[in-house]
Amino acid sequence: MKRQRKSKDWFNIEYRRVQNKKLVVTVYVLLRLSVIVMLVAQMFNGNFENVYTCILALLLFSLPSLIERRLHIDLPDTLEIIILLFIYAAEILGEIQEYYVIIPFWDDILHTLNGFLFAAVGFSLVNILNRNKRVMLELSPFYMAVTAFCFSMTIGVLWEFFEWGVDTFMAKDMQKDTVLQAIHSVTLHPEGRNIPVHIRDIADVILVHSDGTQTALGVGGYLDIGLIDTMSDLLVNFIGAVVFSIIGFFYVKSQGKGKLAKQFIPQMMEDEPDPQEE
Image 1 (tube, helix red, strand yellow):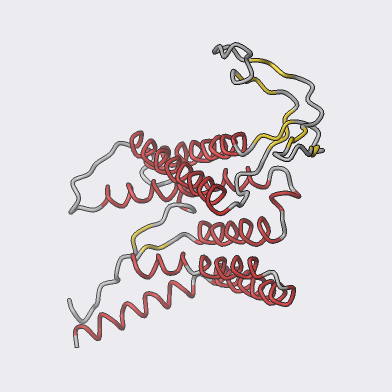
Image 2 (cartoon, helix red, strand yellow):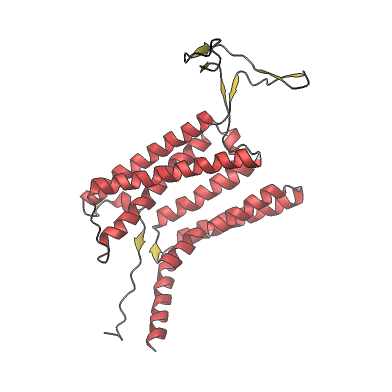
């Protein structure tokens, strides 16, 4: 009987929590329907790689609710909606609709948001441990902010490793190239010295193949293979991580009174007391 009451109470808690997340559910349903329509369209067009991307997006949409159920963590509505929109913007708009190519700063916007969100996740993890009486951990607001920042940057670096691995072993181009009109390289020094040779006003690059044929790239300059994109991603990730770390610092300093931070910091869900057990 006690177990049944506990299960019933937990169901009621979950039901009331879902009732308060009507906006989240609406956004979730609309995005999911949009992806399903996109999936069907890509199947008819024979773009099966995009079909897999749609399936991945649908699976990722389920992560927030799965995390909440499994870990008993309550994600704030604002954070949950941003996560859903982030997944849609990255997988559907970015990959399938090619916003990464069409909109110049689309990738930078997402990586900035990524840095912000993962700083919030890292901050919440430390915040939960700080509040847990069974864990001997008490970090100052400054060290909590530093931990959140380091967590976000670590995730950013691991993602760049992933992009490099996909490009290297699967012949993709997740690390987008950058066209440069000037390069500086010690490799081009005629005597092999550690002195950079400066080449400016590059209008085009001609490729010479092993059979002697030549191909002009026609991109208006030298083609940088991924390096600048990677550094740009890490830089904007850094900016997003710093912004939230500062917000989190003042949130703890004010003893949880900051309204902005509360919209992004997950909290542990606590079971409501069972009056029949008291």
